[in-house]
Image (cartoon, rainbow, N blue to C red):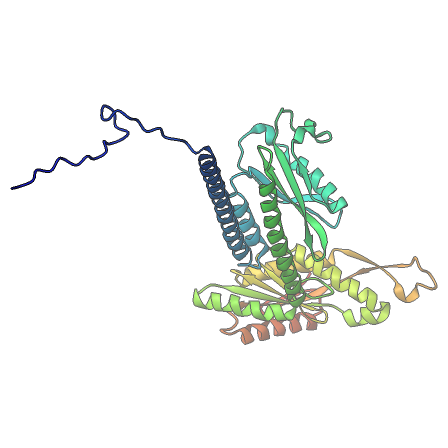
Length: 402
């Protein structure tokens, strides 16, 4: 006989509407929720902090990259003109800089703009350079950087900028050869942020290093290629230059000429009036010769009282005419020097003398197919000019007399 079991009595589901007669009451743990909210806020703050740090790091990395690129560009040349072109191109890429200038104080204590560039087309800003010259003077005198947040509110600059908001200017003295002599100024149409000012400081430092390095190089180069007394090119430079000019003429079937110059009776003049007066004669003659030549011509001191000139793209007759002009300019000038040998007897005694020169001319390819042949022909013609009475030009063994 199968025993019939009664259905198991299972507890009725709780918490569902319409089922069962009893309801469950949920209790809310306020403390736990507060803790969760605090934790969420903490996580959110940590996220924002990490995000800001990442953005700052990204910004710093970008600045480092830009500065590295700038330093590489600035260190790519020792040529002053090319360096200034690089500085101009570089600064104009800075988004918050609308205009900049590089102002220098020269030997006469005057302020001149070596660089000036303006991205703005606002005619009210046309006197920015005048402002920056004044700021440059102040920055160099105090040897401190100057930041002007609003130009028209600074001193009497309203005379330059008759507008309500003319923007800001940041002027930084550049230390060159251990002393400030130049000022780099940046103009922005708005106030600069502190991080932008710091960035411009870094830019100015890189520019200062590059300018100083280039100046040292140029000074060293000047010493190596210029004659210390006369400040014209020396024989070493002439030897390098004549090779280049001759090879160019030879390769492209061009013409060129040489003029070899000697000061007449210089030894006697030097012995009579002293070496100081002799030095003044050399400096005066070299200056006069420089004035009488073209920019493309090369004047060098060849040795003692001898000078030599390279005339590119000049045939024989043209070189003779040029030489005659040089001879005439020296002969027609009345030279005046203080007599140093008699200064104790009469310290105010001055010498007034006429100085003359003799000149020998040679040309390529007419007088020779090598540098040696050209030099020998010029020397021979100079010898004949002196042999025939001095103060004359000889280009064809027939002196051109005064």
